[in-house]
Length: 171
Image (cartoon, rainbow, N blue to C red; front, top):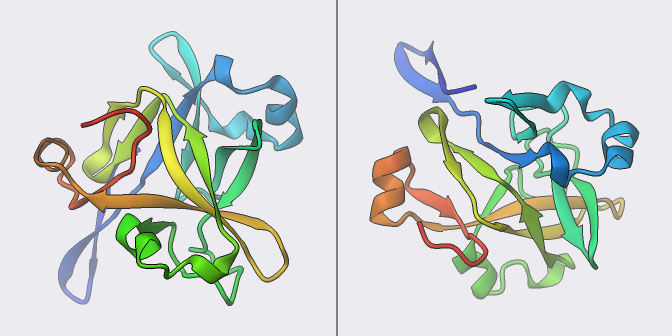
């Protein structure tokens, strides 16, 4: 799972596969069965993990809300909502400026063991990532990764200009 390069209009552009992985032991069996997550199971060495990729046909993320682990749709890249932004990310600064104030959004934690970034780089995550969970026009929860400008180290490691807001971790 990395970046694929394609040509469009004579110039190169990349299709980026960003995501997270959660250790298999962290995901309840009931949640795996109810949401049909078998196609997301991978082995990292000998250890099972479940991968949640933005470019998956059904992009989902595990979120902890009110102490309960559940799955939420990741962003609005598939245009299922006419009122939410057509992306899977939002800038921390836009939240601080109040641009999401009327969305009804709440902050949630995304448990994660690894993150996948630009250029197919996997990196360890100690606790998780912060997300904004906003309802669409039907009241369904949609998760947006909260981003901030990349640290120098993160930019060198991944090539990305933005990075997720980590919980209790500095990269």
